[in-house]
Image (tube, rainbow over all chains, first blue to last red; front, side, top):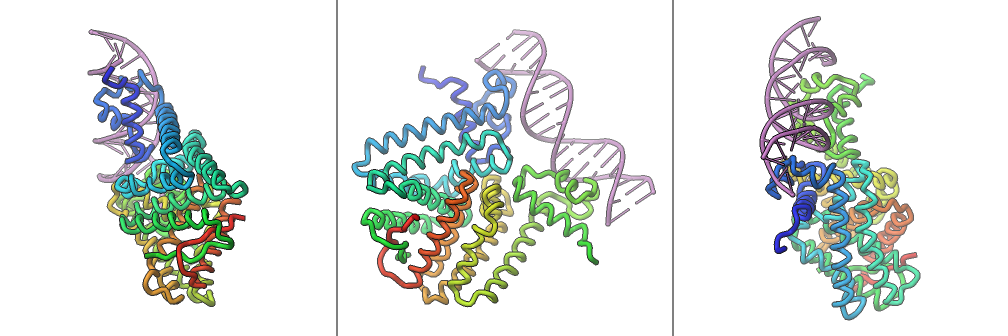
Length: 200
Length: 200
DNA sequence: GTCTATAGACGGATAGAC
DNA sequence: GTCTATCCGTCTATAGAC
C-alpha cells in the first residue's frame, strides 16, 4: 500500500530521465537501473519504449491538470493565477537552468524525431494554453485571450531556453519581473503597442 | 575548384542533419549517406563524432559572424538592424516550425547530454547577444543594453519553440509584430513598465 | 583519399525458468 | 512478477587493401 506499484515507479523514473537526459538518450537499462529491476522484467509492464513515453505523457497530463485545478482554487483573482504560472520559472529555476522546460524540450525532441507521440506531448502545452486563456477571458479579454495566453507561454519558453544556455539566474528574475509588469499593463488595459520595459 | 572539399561537404551535411534530427540521433551512416562517401572514409577527415560537432559549431560561428556583419553594413539604423534579427522568424519560418531554432535546440540538447561542447554551441548565442547589445547601445541604451539584447533573444526563442509545438503560422506573425511594436516603444523611450500589447 | 571488412559495445526486444 | 539468457540490429571506431 505504502509502496507504489512497479509500473508507477517505472513511469516516474522514466519521466525524470526523459526530462534530464532526453527521450532518445534514455535507455531501458537507465530506467531499469533507477527502479532497480532487471531489463527483462521491464517488458512485463511495457512492450515498447513508445508505450513508456505515452504513459509518461499521460502522467504529465494528469499531473498538470491537478496543478492547474489547485491554482484555480488557490488564486484569488485571475491575475494571481496567471502569476502562479509565471512563478514556475522561479520555483523550478534550478531544474530549468539545467534541463530546460520539460514540456518544451520534449515536444521539440519528438518533433525532430518525427515521433508519432509529438501531438500527445503538445497536449500538455494545450492544457496550459486553455487554462491561461480562461484567466485572460476572466479579465475581460474575450477577443485576444488566446493570443495573450500564447504570448505568456512563449515568454516562459524563451526564458527557459536562454537560462539553460547561459545559466544566468539574474536574467530569469529580471524577465519574470518584466512579465509581471506586462501583466499589470494588460490588466490596466493600456491602449497601443507594448511600451518600453524598465530592465532594472 | 567548383566542388567543395569532402571535409566541407561533411560539415555542411552534418550541420543540416544535426539541426533536423538532433546531434545524438544523427549517425555517421546518415552523414556518409548524404555526402555519398563510405563510413570508413569518414574517419580520414574526423576521428570522432565530437570533432564533427566542433567543426559544425565553428562553421556556424563564422557563418553567423558573416551574417551579422552583412546586417551591420546593410541596415541604415540600429533599429533596422534589430528588425533584421527579428525577421529571422519570418524568413526561416518553415524550418523553425519543423525543427525549432538551430542554436536553441542544439544548446538544449548538449546541456541534457552533459556534452563538453555545450559552451561552444552557446557562443553562437553570445555572438547574437553582443551584436544586439551594440545596437541597443547605439540607441542610447547604455545601462540596460545587455538586458534588452537578452530580452529579444528570449522572445525569439519562445516563439520558435511554440511554433514548432503548435505549427501555427499566424502566431509567429503576430508575435513578430509584437516585437516590432515593443522595439518602437523602446526607441520612443517610454518610461514605466511594458504596457498592454494590441494582439491584433 | 577512398574503399571494404570487421571489431566491440550497446540499443531494443523476446523466450522461458522460477 | 521477477529473473537470466539471448537474438538481432545499429552504433562508433579501427585496420588495411587499393
